[in-house]
Amino acid sequence: MPTVTVYGFPRSTFVHIARLVLEHKAVPYVFRDLEPEMGTPTHLALHPFDRVPILQHGDFTLYETSAIAAYVDEVFAGPKLTPQDPQRRARMNQWISAVNNYYYPYMIYHVSHERNVFPQLGIAPDETVVAHALPKIETALQVIERELSHGKEYLLGPELTLADFYMLPSTFAFGLTPEAKGMYPNFPAFCAWRGRMEACPRSSGFGPRNRPAR
Image (cartoon, rainbow, N blue to C red; front, side, top):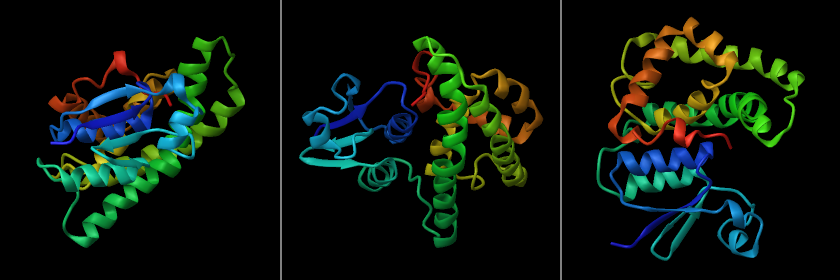
């Protein structure tokens, strides 16, 4: 079988998504930390927009997380993470788009960076950025709480899908901030979902030593 390689940063939110899907499908892969090479010709040859993750499967190279996750789910054996029903598949893609546009930008790019990343670099957090993001995050948590009111295990109900693996890294990293510690207990269905996801055996490497923070 051709070698699978994932290129990215160990702490990247979107790299975590790709790796979680590979691990859930039990696909052996090699991880290569690309951070020292960001912006170099080597990196740009793999991803012309200077981002991560990147997947190589033999002589096939692919970038963009949604494309990588869909490819891995289709090509490799293991539990399928994409519903066959068109409406359920559309709902899954709706969640993926919501993570990309509403959850990740405010949870990670605005708050987690200010609270978890910048202090490590000696940069003072911008409280204006945090304050702007918090109402957006409150709305996002209200949405996921309402959608989980069906009482089932996962975002789409009883079946685990790509949507769950998209949501997990952003909610995990934001969960390390003091703001999340105050907000999360107000959303019990969400907290129960998060607990199930983090307890998944294939998510065992997804924890404090691998905190995502892209």
